[in-house]
View 1 (cartoon, one colour):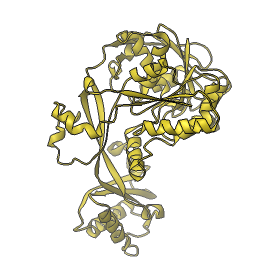
View 2 (cartoon, one colour; view 1 turned 90 degrees about the horizontal axis):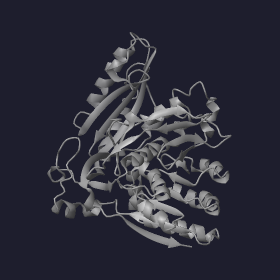
View 3 (cartoon, helix red, strand yellow; view 1 turned 30 degrees about the vertical axis):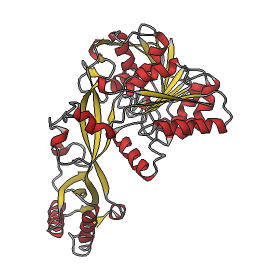
View 4 (spheres, rainbow, N blue to C red; view 1 turned 180 degrees about the vertical axis):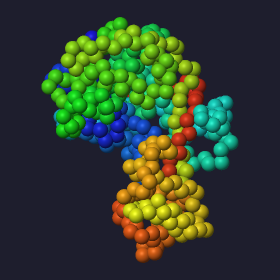
Length: 452
């Protein structure tokens, strides 16, 4: 059996919650999943300000607070927090480990996922990077302001790094569950075409990748099972994986939270479009064949996962600049709140006459902001909280728009107020997502090593 701990589900997650499972000897390896499309955009902004950046700040926490305890117990650390600059992250970890007096720490950095600078050459080789949603080819779009282009890598380079004795593996964009699949393959030597075992490992990774969610966080099922105060102290999950691929989801004894059939089912379907074809770089997993059973307190066994051959292509996620956005939040109240809302809309439209505003959206917080038109609207509400979101191609247009609206402060609908925090805000960059596919043979991961 190999015991795999989950220490991170997003950039900014509390990675120190893995310490009980490390110090208690409950795991053989720990994984930290930090990336999303938004995270990569944030890291690009950091890198533009400082080329030595481009990795998550969490990596520094791992190096200072997690690595010493893990290295002492020979527990490898795997993280995709290297983001856009795994090399710089690895060098920072080596320097930190040396300062801490850790001798013999081997650090591996996996690169090859970042293809932003290779887009012209790849197109010349026949890659069209057609948008998955629209079918539009990359060469046909007028907006070429791409700032990120990262391929979702699989487990293979991490497996190689672990086989070469890496104590910490730092990657760029590796698909979330593949971080967890890698140590299973490294331990058991599963064949790359053993689709059922690979698929089972992917399901284990999918259940672990969002840390607190499978132990009662963000859960309807656990609302009555947990003291609300426990949500701030959840013990993060562990998968105990057998050689046949079956596994148990659990957590460290004595930590807060709960692992139940219900919490596992909730996480199992989280962000899944087709449970019969969960596509990853290493295998296509079929969730519909698996079986769940209670295996004791805070223990759920998963078995029966099946899989089919991996796809011939890999997904590449590209982010591009698509202008700027701002928001203002107004409140209008009883009586005749609906009439006042119409006045507010007319006042804003007239104030922005002639400005190149591209889009304006209105949402009523607490009424239709979550469920849209299916939300039942009251006849004459006591109050309406109105979120106005508006976009433009440049930030100055949005600043002008705010000034024009605020100039109506004493000429507004009766009793209207505006949130001061939104008035004082700054325009935010809109990063549009362009998803495409690339032939896997065009992508060549590489591994570099450092040692203290």
